[in-house]
Image (cartoon, rainbow, N blue to C red; front, side):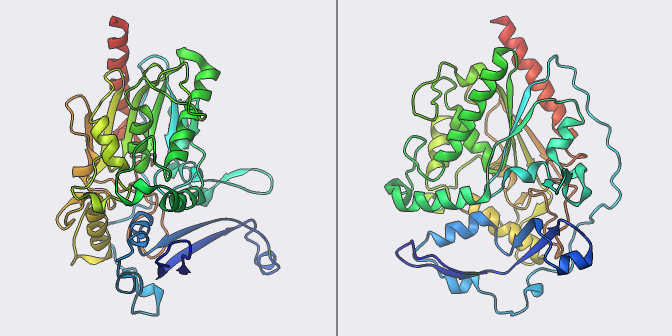
Length: 401
C-alpha cells in the first residue's frame, strides 16, 4: 500500500507491505470467476496501526528509512518460521461455571483499530449469519455465550472510525500537538468515550439497576473505559449533560485484556497525545472502590532484535508503548506486562505466560487464527473465575452498605 496524506501540512508519504485474505459469498470457482461478491476480508501489515499512526503524525520522522522495504517481494517481510507451535486440535477446556448469583451484562470494548466483528467473527452470508472460517472457538462472544452469559453487547466500532477521528484530532485539537489532551477536550477519542457512555446508558434504561454491567476491554478499550468511568460519579451523556445515573451504580467490574494502562515515561512517545497520561493521573489504579478492576496481560513473547520477525515486532511495539527499549521485555507481542497492570493493591493482576494480543497468530505468513489470544475458548477460562470472585467481593461490600 502506498499513501500520501495531504491533509497534514508535512504531506507524509509511506509505502507499506501487507497481506489481504478474502472470503467469498460462494466457494464455487465458476461463480468466483463471474464476479461473485466478497463478504469479508482480513488484513495484516508489517507495522501495527498504532505505530504507523504515531509515525505519520511526527513531522520529523524519517519515513523512507522506516516504511519502505528494500525487498520488492512482500513474502520476504514475514519469516517462514515461527518460534511457537500453533495448535491444530484444540483440547476441550473445562468450562467455567458461574455461581455468583445473577450474571452481569457483558459489554465488550474493542481495541485500537479493531472493529466489532473481530469479537464475534460472524459474517453475513446471503441467507444467514455464519462464523468466519467456521471457527466459533475463536469468538469471544461465542465463548461467553456457551458459559451462560445471555446479554452481551459489542461496542459498535468500525476501523474507519479510528482513522477519521484521529485525523480530525490532529487537525482540530491544539492540545493534540502539545501532548496535553484531556478527557474533556480531546477530539481524537471523544467519539469512543461517548459511544461507551451511550451504550451503558441504553442498557441501564432497558434492564434497570437489577442487572449490573461488566466492561470487558481489549487493548486500548481498557484505558478508554477508565476514562469513561472517571470518578464513578460524573457521567456525561452524548449531549454533554449529566445523566441521572452514575457509573458506579451501573458498572460493577472492568476487565482489561492486553491494555497499555500506563503512559510512556517520555510524553513525546505517547501515541494518545497525553490523553492516557491525563486519565492515569486523575484516576490511577482501581480508582472507584465500588468497582472491581482486573488487568490481564500475556507474557508469551520477548522483545528481541535478533530473534526473528516476532521478537522484532514485539520489541518495536513495547518501545512504542513504554517509551524505552523493548528488548528483553516480556509481553503479548504488542503490550509489555509492565504496562498492562495497574499498580494498585485492589486490582487483581493476571499474567498468562501463553497469551498473545491479537486474534491472528503473530509472525506467520498466512493469517492463522490464534488459539492463544485472550478471547479464545480455551483461554477465557483463565480469567473468568477471577471475574466471578471479584464480583462476589463487590456485591458483598455493597450488601454491607
